[in-house]
Amino acid sequence: MALILMLVPTVALSVITLDSRISGMVDDMSRQTDFMISQIFEQVRLALAQGGGDVPAAMRDNQPLRKLLDSTVAFGPAVVAASIVGIDGTVIVAANGDGEGKPALNLPSVTELNEQASRWLLFTSLPGILTAKVYEAQRRVEINGRPVATISVGVTTALIADRARHLLVVIVATAGLVVAAAMFVVLLVSSQILEQLAILSHGFEQLAAGNSPQEVKVSGVNELGTLAEKFNELSRQVRADRSRLDSDQTHLFDVVRSIQDAVVLLDANRVVLFANKEAQERLAARNEALEGLSMTSVLGPDHPLLALVESTTTGTEAHDVPLTLPAGGTFLVSFFRLGRERIPAGLLIVIRDLTPVKELETALDSSNRLARLGTLISGLAHQLRSPLNGMNMRLELLRHEAGDAGARHIDKLRKEITRLNEAVEALLRFMRPEQLNLSDFSINEMLKELGARVASDRISVEYELDPSLPPVRADRGLIYEALSNLITNADQAMADGGVLKLSSLAQGSSVELVIADKGPGISEEQLDRIFDLYYTTKAGGSGLGLPFAMRAIELNGGKIAIDSQLGQGTACRVTIPIASDALVKSAVSSAA
View 1 (cartoon, rainbow, N blue to C red):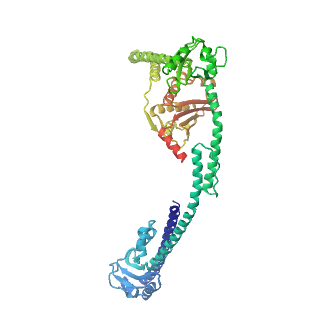
View 2 (view 1 turned 90 degrees about the horizontal axis):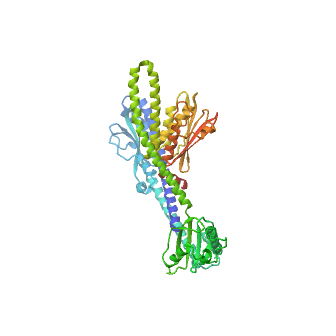
View 3 (view 1 turned 90 degrees about the vertical axis):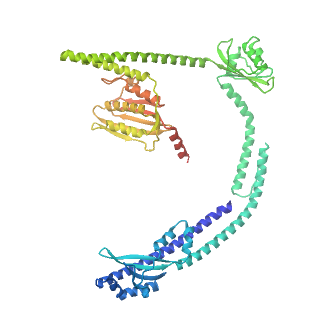
C-alpha cells in the first residue's frame, strides 16, 4: 500500500510534466507560425496595392514576396513549406517555386495539433505527437470583403517529437529510480514495524484475556509510538474502570432507591436484601429499616402481599396485579423471579401507585364528555342553520312589500340574522375535526403572496425571509387561512397606515414566522383573552379570526404566541414543523 501511495503521485507528476512541456513546445511553434503568416500577409497586401487588378500576376511578379517565402522556409523553425494559394485551390506562388500552378496539398490544420497537446488524457494523443507529421496554418486574404487568396505555411513536428521522446525516456528512468528506492525503504521499514506490532499484539491479547498488562514500549515517535501510548492509556483506563465497578454497583442501588415506584429485592428465604425509599414508606409500619428483615416479620402473616409472594415462588411470575394495602391505597404489583431454577434464587417486587392512572382515566373521561358535548353542539348548530336561511329569505320578500319605510328595520334584522348564521357556521368549523391534507411547500412564497395582497399606498410591507429556509410539512389551506387572518388583523390595526414586517427563520426542527405591525398595540388585560371565542376589540369584529388561526396552527403541530405593548405595536410569532426529509438533508450537510 505504501508503495502504491508513492508510485501514484510519481506517475501523476511525470504525466503532468510531460503534458506541460509538450503543450509549451506546441504553443511556441504556433506563435512563431502566426508571426510568419502575419509578415507574409503584410507583404501580400503591399504586392496587391502595387499591382493591377490581376491578383495572381501581382503576387507572382512581386520579388520581395518570393524572397520572404524563401526566407520563411530557410530560417523558420520547423517550417517546411510556404505558399499563396488561389481561390481555386492552385498554388500561385511558393517558396523556391515548389508546386506553383499545381493544386495545393491537403494537410491537417495546426488547430488539430493544439487540441491534441491540450488534452488532459495525454496517453490518447501522445502517439500522434511523438510521430513527425506536417501541419498547415492558413490565413485568408480578402479585397473588399471578397476572398482572393489564402496564405499557407506548413510546419513539421519532427523537432517536437524528438524532444518529447527524449523527455519521456528521462521521466520513465526517473520514475523507475524512485520506485526502486521506495521499495528498498519499504522493505527496511516493514521489518521494524512488524517487530513493534508483535509487541503491541501481545499487549492486546493480555488485555482481552482480562489481565492487566504492563505498559508496552515502542521505539520511535512515529504512528506506532502513538499507538503504543494510546494502548498504555487504555490499559490504565481499564484498571481504573475495574476499580470503580464496585462503587458503580452501589450507585445503581442509590438510583433505584430514588425512583417513585416501590422496589423490593428478596432472597430465597424471603429476607429483604434491598428496599428503596418508596418501599420503606409503604411497607414499614414503624419506619424501621426493611433490609435484613423477613417479609413475614415486617408485614405480618395475614398481609395480602405475602400470599402473592408465595404463589410467585412456587408458580409463575405475576405482573400488574391490583392490590389494596392495609395502610390504604390501591397499587399495581409485579413479581419477577431471579434465576431459572424451579425455586427462584430471589424475587424482585415492583409496587406502582395507581393514583396517576386514575388521574389519566379521569382526564380521558372528561375528554369523552367534551367530545359528546361537541357532537351535541354540532347537531344543534345544524338545526339552526335551516331556519335562519328561511328567515333571511322571508325578510328579503318582506322588504319588497314593506317599501322604504320598513326597509331600514328589515335590513337590520337581516344583518343580525347573517351575523348569527356566521356565528353558527364558525361554531361548526371550530367543533368539526379537520381532515389534514399535508404537503411540503415554501412558507416564504406564501408570505410573499399574502404580503402582496395588503401592500398599498397606506401599508408598506418589509420582508426579512431566510433564503435557505427548507419546506414545511402542513395543510397549506389551513396555514394560508391562519396567516391571512393574522396579516389582516395587522393591516386593520394600522388605520393610518404604517409598516408591516414579515420575517422567517429556521429554528431547529421548526420554522419561526413573525408578523409585526406598528399599530396601537394590545393591553395586558386584552392580551389574555384574545384567543377566546367571540372575543374582539374591533368594532364589527366577529372574534373568530384568532381562535381559528390558533386551532389551524395547532392542528398542524405548530404554536402561536402574540407579544404586544401599547403604543409600540404587536408581533405575532408562529412556529410550523419543517418537512422531515428536509431536516435530514440539513443535518447531513452540517455534519459534512
